[in-house]
Length: 387
Image (cartoon, rainbow, N blue to C red; front, side):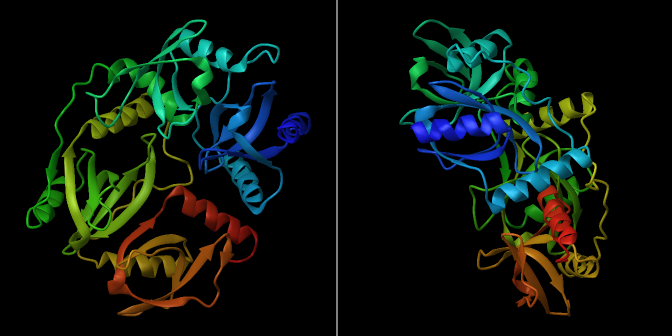
């Protein structure tokens, strides 16, 4: 533990970008240490795109390792610089100040209680992530009104002791939106999900939605726990193109999926209500889409969308993500697109396969393109001269 505290103090003193690995969770936090005490730390964090993402309190026993140097940190430093240079849309970030002579955990909880902040908690010996509003802070007891953006009927009150809490995320992108949305979310009425699962009804349903405003969710056949939220852009004989929105209600690029690979279309759900509210709040705050993304693209419903997207990506050496029929996911760019086959040059750990592998167009079930992670990978490859 002493070596970890020494590492944390070094990161604080030298203002170093670090990765903090946890002892009991897979989540890795990237950011700058702002406060170190005998019981825990505050880390000002960044999301996967290099955007400031609030902060996290970590109790010292929850910390397994502090990393100062790695390829991942180099990539994150590039993304942080790009996000700054390109003026990515972001939340306000960490705005609290802390006294390193007082209990950090209690300071965070008290701030959250006074300012009505939605926080995310992780408890010792508990695999769940709890999101909610801190409604009371006493000497030996904390009460939290839980919020479930997927199911409005599931909003219990949680009572716990401060020492149970190992991790507190606060003031991040999504949590800030939930804080603004919380009064409205609590007024939204639970709806039973409405889902179209009949194979013969799915294409007609999607055609009725094409170019319209309602948010829907597409559930793929291969993984029914996964779903894509957005607006239907274009429907062809065998495919659907969707304008995606991310978890913070911002435009998240496009996906084209084969109709034959769809399990269902969700038309109504509590989560869709939540995402619509987030989207409206972004508009009201003039939080536009990320400036490097194009949310206005239209597609020709008479084109074979898989061939068209592969040809366009090959022409401009654009990074895209494929999902193949056998379940494999590949990030990279295509070349030599023919009538039935193409070569795909994968990117793994920022290393580009210059030779590539041959795939059949008919084996591609999904193509994701025009999204932020692909843009950042592409920018880094171009700057390094690999693309």
